[in-house]
Image (cartoon, rainbow, N blue to C red; front, side, top):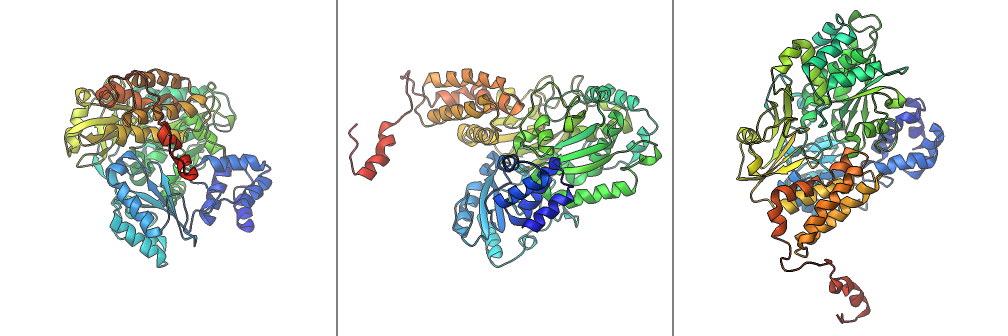
Length: 599
């Protein structure tokens, strides 16, 4: 263990900002990061043990204890539960003889829960040793566990053919399906690789920025900040070096469009990063990818190497003197909060993914305190098409305030879950008709847990910054779903689990709101409990980042649009109820002492 760890540290030149890469390598090799490894890494990087340990403890896929030769992480998202996760989980426990959170006595298999892994279109899904297994059933679980016990290798556990497109590539070989249902100008694969790079070499950086500004393309991560304006700010910022980050940490439950782009159109994405680098004067780009997509690593590295050979990356790109730019891949390790740009930068520097106070903004002081652009995957892909076809062409799609197209990840109760590219301005009704609803629709979650849960009376609303803004996720719920249990409670559990804990508001209030929610669901609530949840949720706006600020949205939007579900469960003739059951609280003590409750 010592020799391997030292070798990994040397590979990264004893650079403490590459701590994430070092920890990922050790975790992958041994299945855990021991206290001995932590001490050795700290010594080699000239850090304290505590600094290394706090990074290890922050991320979901790092463990200080052995996780088994075969580590199975089963997704517990709302859609996974809708599609039969409970049956799969039960089968895993029965076949392995352990509970979730445990490892078999022989150290062979570990069972763990994890949040959405970007496979909502093919649930239930799990990660086994960085390989994805989709559409699991109890029967498939029996086959998988049997094969593991028989000594088969991870690649021998598949029973289905590989997925479509690049999922079949020798460097991927995954059973994941792309499920591209509707292709628009961004997903259109018929473009000449490198043409946009060649075109910008004949433009000045300011001309590139002006073209992007004139297109009115906005960030596709959810906030919708004008991309060209962000680039202009960064170009004008002072700094010895500048960086381009692509945020591929799509951890919002229900979102998987970036997975499809990374699989089918990575060259388009890399080209967008090169254009951004040229525009702002950056020499290095970093593609930050969520750990759940690590199965794509070899494939993406191969494409980057091919780009270097064609001089799309490297020094004097396409013969343009001084146009130097290269890209490296940085994986996260399981933390939804790292989707926030400053938390992502902290993570890339080898630290806990805690959001920074702002200002200063990343365009002024970002990665390594240098001016940094952070753009979403879809945004950078859009920029390539803007350069190729012009700002006016791009503005011909969408609406005045929401130009261009939007990639949507659609899942839940529909016949055709997958990725759809539509022009901004589509109504929710249009989308429901397009995806083929499989039942009478009770609700649609627009924008993931941090978005809005809307009912049929709002299905005529249009997607766009003028009306319903979304980062790209729509989850459809049929009328047979229990919205409070299947959706709201699941989303609140997600926010509680994913909070970095830095802000007291985000650390405390979601748990308090969850307790109130359970009280109502258990028929112990009163009308005032509903009002309390609405009023108390306002305090979350004081949180540092978007996770904390939107953590009450599952409750707030469901009360707004489905208040009758709450009122049907509260006690109509009671103004006050603590929800505390004294008899239930003392029953264990009475059983131990042999006493009878005298209440």
